[in-house]
Image (cartoon, rainbow, N blue to C red):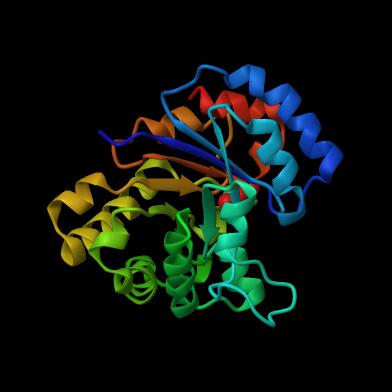
Length: 249
Ligand code: PGA
């Protein structure tokens, strides 16, 4: 039985006051909800206040990125150990916006996963195809490359500790959700890749989230798919009532 995860990615939204206001409204709406892991990923500068607000609650906090070195002369970067030290338990890795706008490669994704695990964080590793790649019929090929080059090299022991998020880039922030069938099909492809690299039980246990325009009005249809183990949510995670209704899918 795979425990679902409902994770919110706040991207570059919300200042510290807005972060506090969110948690004051959100936490009472989800208190006692133990059927899924609830995760929120604010900006780096708001992690401390998010962690303070959620101490001793059922909500976990994550970073949106990290750098793989432990420390050093890397201006503007944040290490995995720094995230753990501030109270984070999760981290997003390889989000398509990191790949598209900041040149993140599969090799970098692999190194970031290793650093996250070494520091005790649970990485949510994002994969997914561009619209042009889907239109060319290359979705499976893209997922295969991202898996083989970014994820498979971490090895079986590490693999057991990560979460994968399938996020078709054409569905992110566009209002175009992948249909539950399209999403489930991609999840099956990913699970087959897991099976080929790490065997049957790794494939059965791996949690694969769907992300891309998940909203309160489409979450149920996605979550009834056996292949879909949760959601990674951008826009609809910014509002406490909307994100709470996703938690109560
Ligand atoms: P969206 O973003 O829900 O706003 O489409 C999802 C994501 O980028 O993780």
